[in-house]
Length: 362
Ligand SMILES: CC(C)(COP(=O)(O)OP(=O)(O)OC[C@H]1O[C@@H](n2cnc3c(N)ncnc32)[C@H](O)[C@@H]1OP(=O)(O)O)[C@@H](O)C(=O)NCCC(=O)NCCS
Image (tube, rainbow, N blue to C red; front, side, top):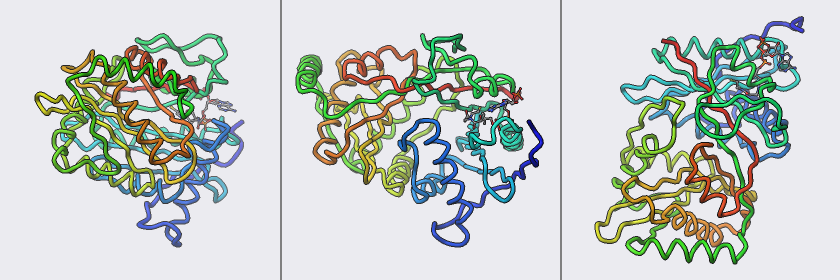
């Protein structure tokens, strides 16, 4: 069914501000992508304001981001975002491709992906990552496509899975997307806390809202750098990220500008003063859901229930700061058994699976 006019693929100019004549196309793109997210999840968990999306696209010091849109009859019907990590030796780029559900199967996604792959090639990168998302209701127990590691698979008959496979992408990793109802039942909370405290005598927690304290900044940056190294990433190539205090500040400021500042708790090893673990939640200015970002326990400090300790303390702070938050969303690698065990004990429930696909251009 390809009788409709071919889409025009054009670069989207990233405006300096929203609500100006120059920002109309950008705002249209955000509205179209919000519609795609609502159609997929049947809720507005992943619908964002134009201000928030602009803040993320404008943060380009450590990632270059380029957007092309597909236009049919003067209307935006899809887009590709090409994201280039700017580390000196980076080899990867990420492509996010989405088309409005009503016009799928007409070659628009293929045209956007081809544009994105040209950008990656021109940018001298050799490994492309792309994502597919699969709500729990679409996981029907039929044939699945698996990554090398992890027990879960993606539905083999999903149009998105077929699209990725037919264009040379390989499933590198499956992530579990889950959510936790807040507040947690008191009994579960007490059990988890007693267990964590019994194992973490040499550690204390420190928490902050929005920005890390200056005296912990460099050590916190060093811990964040481990996030691209110390996590399970069996089937995918990731560029190692270099984190400095400046980069932590840019990340904090991007989320403040999005209207979703970070609430962070770290565990500090009391005898040495070193930071051993951290966890982050982004807390939107309104609404009832928040998103879990990184959680990491440094390799040398594992086995002391520090993941549980920092998560509990961050949730306690969240309840103080924003009691309206009733759901916490999180994503974990399907093969990350220790992290999933912590989340199961908290009571997180599966909402869907995400596939990370990779294609090598070399
Ligand atoms: C994946 C996606 C971008 C494809 O967009 P699209 O415009 O449907 O792409 P195309 O029309 O170029 O190709 C879709 C393929 O599915 C087939 N198809 C037929 N009817 C279809 C329908 N109703 N819906 C989806 N695909 C259909 C097409 O014929 C084509 O087959 P091919 O792979 O053998 O060529 C789109 O489905 C989407 O936005 N999905 C959600 C986001 C996503 O998963 N993106 C990551 C992609 S790696």
